[in-house]
Image (tube, rainbow, N blue to C red; front, side, top):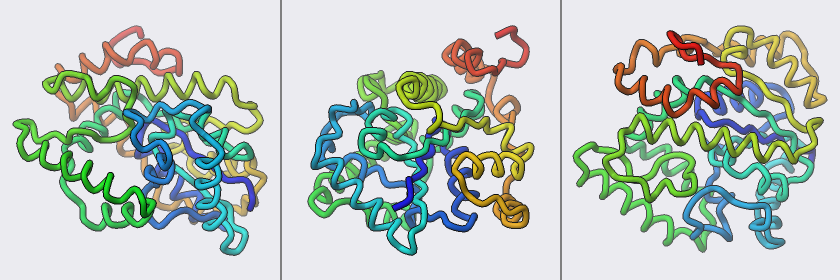
Length: 289
């Protein structure tokens, strides 16, 4: 199987975008669902969060996950593209499982990323989406996840804020946070910890296996950015195929949070995220950070 491509990012919109443009290019495939968190958690399903260590990639765990990749990639020798968002909290674990993988890391402004996450925390039930993901739950894990899913939905029905009990990457200690924590702060903390952990883990990965792209740069010039990514992957970058793959990329969501969020939410996100934003070259409008 050709070396897989693992997309790492704290914002679902960015990872989805990269997956979609890559799998619209010849020679790349992905799972027929949004992501495969249950595959990644097999053998570690009871761990309270998604911050896996490399030691948790035991031989049986590695073998199971690799079989799933080999099965999908074996169809015509295509290159597998994987984008499960929680992998932002466990890059070293992923590297232990897939030591030949190439990593595409997409970074997005924390204000926009947190605003997008806030919407997801209050999202409604999508039967088609849930069934597509359920197809990739290991058979022995089905009863466990069915019970967890039911409890999550029941909690939402009984909660005044209509918020899901858990959504997205679960960082260490997230389940212990107060139930009345403002959603803006919870979402900002999620973004911050995902980026922190990704930065920490990537420091131990051979930089020749890592390519970083900014969301804002990609949507501004998608064809040029995709061509660079394909060159990094050693794949053909035919201009017509690149243009076709990028045809649906739009940049209208860049900076949208500044106009859509209440001032109180923006202040919370700025407080939580500003130091890390500065590290990645972002600024908060109206501030010097």
